[in-house]
Length: 274
Image (cartoon, rainbow, N blue to C red; front, side, top):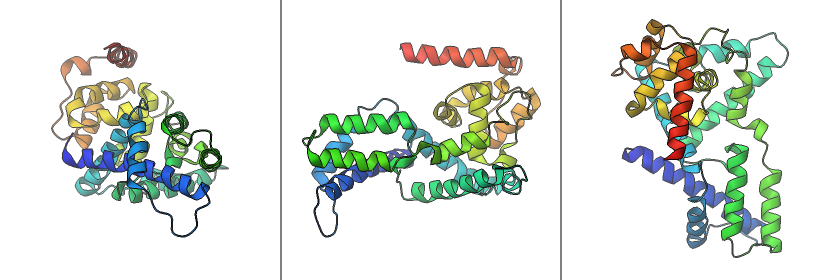
């Protein structure tokens, strides 16, 4: 990881801890300007280091943001409003336009928070949100206190996974994730929608799919593209859009989609067993 990615990950983790500490302070009934105690933030931040998958999630968000900025500069891809999202906003299908507008707002929010190296607690996937709160409570000196109970209630009441950016993207791309549907082009779909569809069609987690877009994992990205059913020529074209230095190896080009998906699943199992 380069310095920018490391700094962005650290910033997101610290921001998550600050949000919890500020909620603690508010729940304690203290008046005046809410401030974060640096020692308390450090304690909560250390507890979050033990949450499985949180570091990987933050890493994936940092990589996605970097790729979004990179393709905005190289190919003129709007980081918020892609041609596909614009078409969905103009849809006459009931509910589609509203969901697309919500996705547009969420994507704009993603860019703003990432530029500040922040990550709202309410944008975490439900399993990570729950795990972060469990880690905080386990490490909290106020565990079981009225303040801790009120703070947790405030955090949970404010959380709605259905309104997170990732949930909105998943709902928008349900049809596109079907193997019978054409695989959208990254320039047409935009980075966020493209990566969501790629994850669904290659049967990988979105975080793992995003991480595969980083140059050192170009081989995994190429396998994922073949897993979607893209023809070798189309897979090579998309691969070049994401990473101009990457080449589609003959062995990967020869894979059929089912074999490619099985290979990706096998590599996930192997990683888990290491």
